[in-house]
Image 1 (cartoon, rainbow, N blue to C red):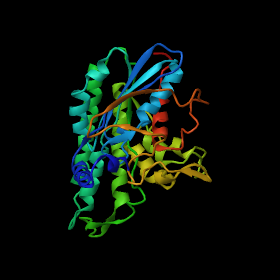
Image 2 (cartoon, helix red, strand yellow):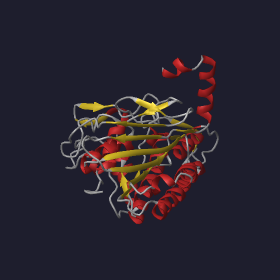
Image 3 (tube, one colour):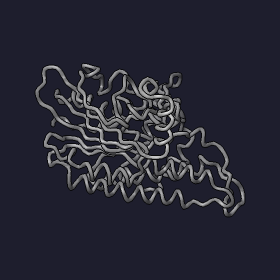
Image 4 (cartoon, rainbow, N blue to C red):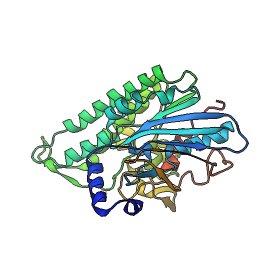
Length: 356
């Protein structure tokens, strides 16, 4: 590992312990430098470890995390240089992303060349609630899950309102990315606590999936109400790219949030009607016989293509590079469905507007 080359073993252990118990700023600015262009526009992304491109290191992150993948698509569409600004904090819960990234670092989206603002949050609220629930003994207490849902709703709404009020007036696109379900297969275990009515233990996946569905619904529904688009990562990660149940619809499309549907309809579709089509994103099936791993070995963070950039304890980094691809077939790069970050970046890019 690169950390071991830079730090003594004792320091490495100390840093790893600190990182696991707290948050870590991971800020990156990477410009897609398209040959023969002069115009330069900016994509600003706020979030936690997902948009950060976290890869287990306290010093670096994926160069091509989802926001930078989106910038590459935009560069081709607009024939322009695109600066991907990622203002992220790994480990941050929704309130932290809102207060210490979106609000405290609003200047990045206020720049006059900003054309896209995107954000993601709530993953750590959900993960912390899941850990708390799994540690319970005696009678199960759902309040840790409902509190996470309530906090997510509060800060997603606040973030959208704040971006609407403070982003540069020339911004053409605002997008939120919702949550995939990390550890879907691993949650097929029983709880150590017992249901208050039946006295039986609870299946963890059965408990967490409806909570996650409610969070994803509120993200996309708030986006509909507040002028944002919603990149449905849950559908992109958890459903196959073919029709596995014979209902005439590709699974990933069937799972997507539908503008204007009710929460009850969405949650029932995810947790009951189409439950059999859900698959752990460690094996994202792009056809009936071919799959790719969208999740790193930590069973949480998306996989990525390419190298890393400095982002972490010693500060962020700024860099420039040529686009990886000169053209896209049907709006997709050659590896759009092979890595988690590539798929997420493509999902955001589907809302790109034709001109800057």
